[in-house]
Length: 524
Ligand code: AMP
Ligand code: MG
Image (tube, helix red, strand yellow):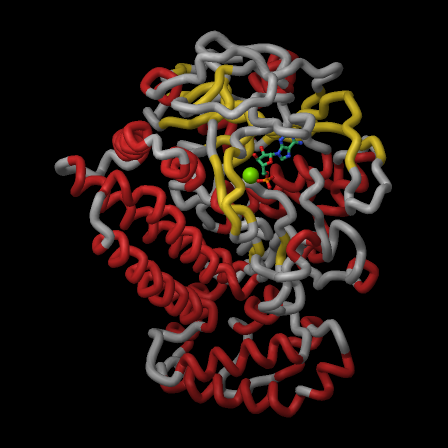
């Protein structure tokens, strides 16, 4: 395995918990606790991402060496690694939850890649830390596989995200009660190595504000700006203000992308919000099959549906409010924070309109488009149409002669389809008139470039919940072919891949109410 160059600024520049050991405790006056991964019985490389390995300067030979599985299963450290668990808090489901921290994630170090870029390597499921509270620090194969698959799929979809280098089986069992119904059972364990420039969350700042540790709060903000936002310059106050503004901007862009591809995070607690505006902490997330703004994949969220698909922009804004409250003591003025929060809404609206115009192939967002899109969303929901299939097919629609049969395999319920058929046809006619107003009809070249623009933002392949579940069911039996086939197809989500049509099909009926396919729990 080729050596990695480490430059561990987080542990070098920020204060550590003076206490050693993994006993559960409240950690004051520190950003992290030093803790090593707990070795596992039999680390076994189940999957890896060639793209992420290449970022680090590694090829297949490096990854296949037995040392790789040992390191990324948590049994060995490479020279230069200085493992730690970070201290953070968070608002969970709208309430302040106090100290949370990396209860099962352990950062190994910060790599400087051959291009000079910084990557934090973090194991998830690597054993207990001072932040494990009442839990075991481990992760099951099903949740680790889901995190591995979706991180990489999101990257290829063009959505900001943390990445995943590897999925390593532990050879150990982990006991989980998947639906909190008294049916605990042992499941295979696994460790994911996540990779991102930083895993700092909103909650890393909130914890210091909640404890009145203002000096440390300012230090962490300035550290974050210097390391992760080097383009932000100026005096301390101006930089902190601009930084908060930039976090709002990135978060708005992130959520606009989620809405574009039909991703539902499922647990948008402030400890699961990346300060870099990346999708982070893949747990009971889900993908929209039939278009339903009220759908939440998370069983824990089923009551209030706080984290439902259509509510994500509002929740992102609420989370940024909590971050604003937290960083206020380091800024001392409310007005610039309030302005940034207002700008969040404007940027979200702008990005969301731009992406919607691209998805629908409208030259530009214009007056009246909102009503057209609202009616579409109402129809997609009422007639239970598949979001991904509908949007992808739309680029093949001839606006001169719109044919509703183009969408025949996007429907989940024939009765609902029939009930709304006339309204759908009327919408297609209205839409075609709108497209014609862009002057593309009859112009082959303009139609072709419109189509290319649409196909670049409307994926054919997304990691539908049931596809991930099929890969999990096979992997739990030791069969990894389904996982690698899925990873392969998700590498090019916008390109037709002949022979792989089954990965583009709508959710089969058996998956409608199956655990793992339509509902997921936080138990992972
Ligand atoms: P999550 O809802 O997955 O973001 O987790 C919330 C908090 O619970 C974080 O502090 C996690 O580190 C912690 N946590 C979740 N699962 C475990 C586990 N199996 N062992 C220890 N801590 C955990
Ligand atoms: Mg989390």
